[in-house]
Length: 143
Image (cartoon, rainbow, N blue to C red; front, side, top):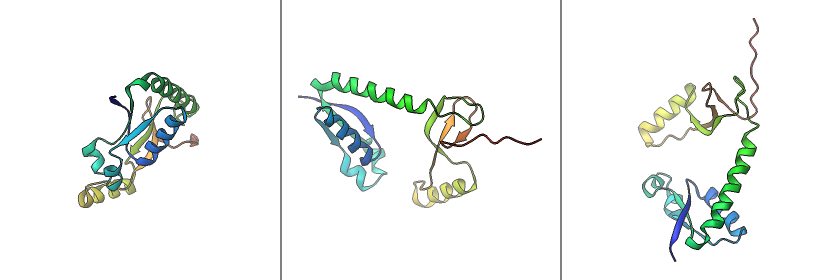
């Protein structure tokens, strides 16, 4: 029976959480390339990440499960608003290099280690381009 790739992850923790949720729904699933990605994160670029695969006969159940997961995710993120323009349209886990600390850490680690160690993950507004963290409040400037 052929196996189909359902989702690809960068780290093994997220892959195992997704696998356990699928197994809870009664779907047999398997992780591919987990060990090579866990040894070194840079190998994930070469292998394409950790792949979660399921039997071809289970694709309809997995498709329905993924749609439910996506609707849950949208329901959680709809209440996060940009502090500047109050838009609910944003990128989640945007890797920011704004600020002097992020710039120098990225530059030095890229030059010497070929992998940027300092990464600040934020939300980025699709409307105004503002980068913010969850729960930030808009600063009102006094005249």
